[in-house]
Image 1: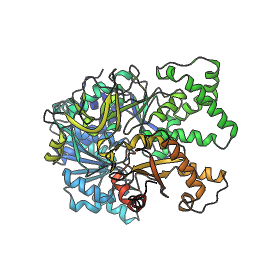
Image 2 (image 1 turned 180 degrees about the horizontal axis):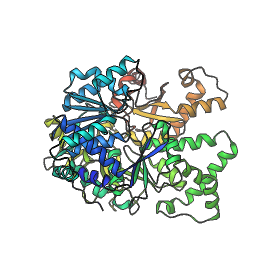
Image 3 (image 1 turned 90 degrees about the vertical axis):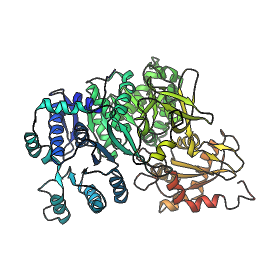
Length: 613
């Protein structure tokens, strides 16, 4: 088990292994280039010295606005090494959202990835406290005639310069620029010191800055990944946004154990990255696993033979599911044949070497977990929040139960309130919300337990189950409570459903908005001989509507009458992070969806006084 006290202990481990490979980064041609532990140390020291030269002191804030790339951890580690606080920002945020967070945090420096991200920050700079902007992609030879690029060069520093010659000069200018002095400075940071301010995505309300200390994060790292036994022989692709604590904690764990991290900046590059890097550890949000499942089903759908083989292999796997969930490999002839024809090809999509698949960020859904178990892949589902640094509970090789999120970590206490809400206490629970003392007080009980906002239960063996978000529970006008997430997950088990949002709070009955999985729907429509000229035209076609109504009816057959979905509407849009319906961890932005589709929702209930259907 790790024995970390601060995140700086992670940095010193990651950068103290000499010529051992620590990370992989893609060059301009797409090739993967190794970065050694010693190179990490040099770059962290250089950037830390520059920040000090700029007057950044302990407690000052440094914002990071970037996709996942090797410069991200350099900035993070350099900031924390001098006792400053970093403020990670999602790269998909608008300039108005960025302005609000930079202003609220009081960041003095912003480190951004590209000219596009620089333009956002530059447009709102006068509204903030920024003194310096650093750009990772700032090639002096690029686009000499481009006025915007020239402006960026004049008003921003080049990251490569700061970790290169300018950084070396800054180290030399320090009163003591020795290696020993750098290590001593990093070790002066204490567990109670603030490490980061992470702004929540605000699924149901205003975004808030979660304050996590070094001790919060370190205590979580010490316990969350210990049962997996990762070593320097392991590797992992960093593709979930590092502005989210789940991805960041995973990277910290990999660095601590000496595993290699490969940085993948864009989700559409993930498939090729898995084939090239061949990771042994894969951590994704549920939507990633759902997309892999959809791709397998789509690939087999056009061929009756392939479709029949997949169905047969899944049936074989279902018979071996319990063995798979125990971590055992079935040995029968049929399972061996199914593995050769189907399972091995699905593993190949992960690169062929994955040992540990972990899911977090949102509920996985037992149907998805079961499907992967049937092809021989255990997914270790976990649970946590930004406010808990993040892991509260996690399935692992030693303790696993499908449908649960695992047992709580040994250093985390859990209890269930009278109304079913999960309350937690432990060293990983956050310090509070930045500049929001009232909001902080509201999420703690009188005796100091953090209110997670999730409805949960704990079984007789200590496994934790999350059933829904307390604020997302719908209450019908008849007083019945409906948990939307399990219903939405059941709908998403159909290949044709991308996302679903159950609505109906304060109404007589529940209804649902469905954003189709358009690639699958378009293939299905062509196979049915349905002509369409647009997505709007497609979702309005009577046979398409009937197919989705059949999906809803199948789900309804397993629900209580008060839970059943009485009405449905297919939207012509594919919900995404960029268009605002999803958070970066792929959860529904319900308030955005409710506002965007207010007319469609109103139509569900236009005749509510006289009708239930």
